[in-house]
Image (cartoon, rainbow, N blue to C red):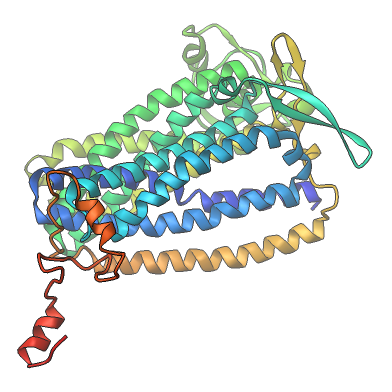
Length: 505
């Protein structure tokens, strides 16, 4: 294989592994906010235990997401130096904003969320959960904005710079807000966040259904399953809306991508395929089932209106068809499956009928795998469908702006052997990380929620509870995890046993 294919495979592997974690983190963040909100209102200790349990799962995924995400930034410099020079001014601002406005917000309040259960009051802890959730969403905002700019660039101009005696193009921002709100950023962001919420809801359903099938933590499982189903149902329906908006935007800004998604080879009224096997050589979709004229209707609200086909795209600017076609249809098929599954389940929540249907609970145990697959398939379709461009050409203020082909974004000094060796090393490390994630995740699920979590301290009316907790650390007279009483020391079970045996702590 040549260095371009190997570099693309390496980045695809690292980003796909990384993308296991951010959508789940965002989705679980919403679940935590809902559960902590219910606990704050009811003070029911079952909800307290549920909030603590999902916080532990969230923290595990957050740690893996951070550690695997850092790698990709280094790959920009090692394998994609020409690309980094071209987009550095744009990506630098977006990634800096992500670090300042999102990561610090998320990671800062995560410390309170994870370690502050017995140190801050319920209101402050709920606020921390809300900030962590919003921080994870803000992080997605800046990453999606940067990626969307590559698909539909805006708010920039091209300048030339001399690198090693050669003139190289570089994109520089001329309008920050136009760059942020480029033509695809809002549609892609909403669809990405909706996909994350579906994954979070189905993940909660999966764990809860497993507990119900095993007869463990049944009250916890019933409550969490109900929340998970409602979240998954609402956002599965929203995915129809955001998905349609994004596809409509793609038809206007990236017609070659839409043509690849639907195997539309000839410009004219377009059918909507439910499945099939596109053949680029014969320029037809084999073994397919299509709804006549439906793609034209969805794009133009007219069954006979023509849709741009691949024949109107220059041959050297066409994406490959098979992979984006299959991934796009896999994503849609799974999304429709989630709608059918959750809408079928919602009426069964009344009277707890669903909890007696073991076959349906088993479906939910494995449905989370479909949610992971749908998120991955969506990104694969989006990234392969924009080829051969890593940054699309555009027109800014009536002036044509050159794009950047993927083959032109590579590092000049990196060879195929070096990339192949790094792929092998990354593969070994990521297999180890995946095994660790599965092991720790399984151990936390097997342990389950704590039956009798500690009661957090009450907040004072003047809101000084959090400041008092921080002040208590100055003299190191207490810990961040042990609950305290009026004399600044709680009698723990171990201390009580020592006292009963005549010992002194």
